[in-house]
Every structure is written in structure tokens, then in C-alpha cells.
Amino acid sequence: MQTEQKQTTPWVSGRHRPPSIRRVPATRALTWLGKGWSLFIGQPGFWLRVSAGVFVILVISLFCTVIPVIGPMVPLLMLTLMLGGMMFAVRRQGEGRPLRFAMLFEGFRLHPGNLSLLAVFYALPLVLMHLLTMLALGGSLMVGLLGWSVGTAVSTVAADIISFLAGLGVLWILFLLVWGVLLLALLFAPVLVMLDNYPPLDAMRYSLKASLRSLGSIVLLAVCFYVIFVVVLIPPMSLAWVYLPVQYLAILVLVLGPLSLLGVLIYIPVMVGSIYAAYGDLLADQNRVTAPTPTVD
Image 1 (tube, rainbow, N blue to C red):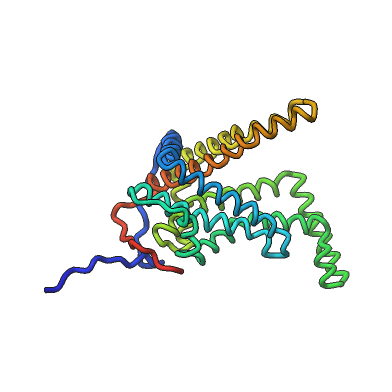
Image 2: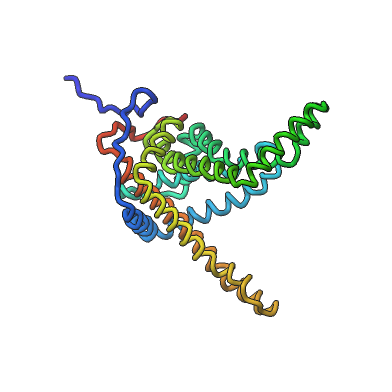
């Protein structure tokens, strides 16, 4: 007797069904934050270890930024890959399954290529800022590479145009618009790649559509993230506003520094859990065909 085999083939670009994108009120962002907090208090020991691992790896990766060309990409690459792993752990926790610290690195194992491509898109604003700065400084690189007078002329014209636009604020406004749209496109892209096996460009497209459809809730969530982060950093920031003798200042740093670090370690899973909750509200479709074990890129 033939038995019906359960379909476990992940989605492939051009063959999958687009997710059902929903519109929600702006106040739903507060619900997402509550779910993010519930995620943390559900497994505080696990998430503190994971956050500490993320923090240490990011600090170490900052030393790689001195490497020419690829160095500045390393922290963003590590962050995106670990974000995929954290989203994997969030789903496991929601399913009531056991959690392991090694899940932080599931993004490295399951979707290294697609998540790395998303990291490249995360870095685009930084690359754009760098290129604009080079042009505004007179295009010395062009002159150095070409050694022609035309290089100086083109660089000077470009620098004058950029200076003029910057003076009007147009350049800054355009950059913020491009950056904002890119951030919306990347908001849910890692979780769509990691958990639903979307190709990166499709994931960014659906993330942008979902974010724009519920823009009020996304903006409120971003504002809440910013406010919470500032509150977390108030202890060390307040030291710059209060004049104290050096000996007392050192004591405050020793006391408040660990509290601020603990706040950052809690902030990371709350933020990840909130984004996952938003994804579940705006994009998750119960009728999707998903794979129990995603394929490796």
C-alpha cells in the first residue's frame, strides 16, 4: 500500500506562494514589545548566555574593521548570521522545544550564503556614505589612480555639486530616504530567509511591502526600541553630565557599568522577540509549505 509522503520541499523563488501580508493598527507595536519581554522571561538564562555571546563576538569583530575593503563588513556579517540563529531559537522556544546555545550559529550552518547577502545590503548605506565623503573631499583617489588632469576636473565638479546639495540639505534627505526604505526591506528579511527559506531579494520585497502596509506600527516599534536603548544607556551617559571627583567617578563606573551591560543583554532578546512577533502578525501564513529541516545554501 502506498503511503502519502508529506511535502517537505522548501520554497524556491518563482514557485512559492507570497505570504498573506496583513495591516495592523499602530498600537500593535506595544503588543509586540510585550511578546518580546515574554520571550526573555520565558528562558532568561538561555537568552542572557546568547546575548553575551552576541556581544562578545561583535566586540571581537570590531577589531577586523581595520582590514581594507572587507573589514568594515565583518561586524554586519556576524550580526546578520547570528540574527538568523536567534530567530531559529525564538521559533524553537515558541514550539516548546529544548534550546541550546549552539542555536546562535544555526545561521552559519543553514543559510550562510543568503544571510551574508543580506549583510551586504545592510552595509550599503555605510558604503554610500564612504563614497560621498570621498567625492566631497575632492576625489583624491581618482587623481591618484588616473593621474590625469581630467580626473581633477571631474572630481572638483562632483565635489562642488555634492557640496551644493549638502548645503541645501537635499543630499542628507535623499540619503535618509534611501536608508529608511532599505531598513524596512531588511526588517523581516533575515527571519523570512532563515525560517521560510525565501531567497534574499524576495524576502526584502515582502518585508518592504509588509512594513509599508503597517508603517505606523513599525515606526512606533522603532521609537520604542530607541527610547528603551537610551534608557538602558542612561547610567554611563549620566556620568558625562555630572561633575564628580575622579575617585567617585571610578566607583560609579564600576557600579553602573555592569548594570548597563545587563540592560543591553536583556535588550537584545526583547528586540529579537518583538521583531519575530511583528513578523508573525504581518507575514506569517499558516498555510505555507515549510520544511522541518531547511536545506543548506
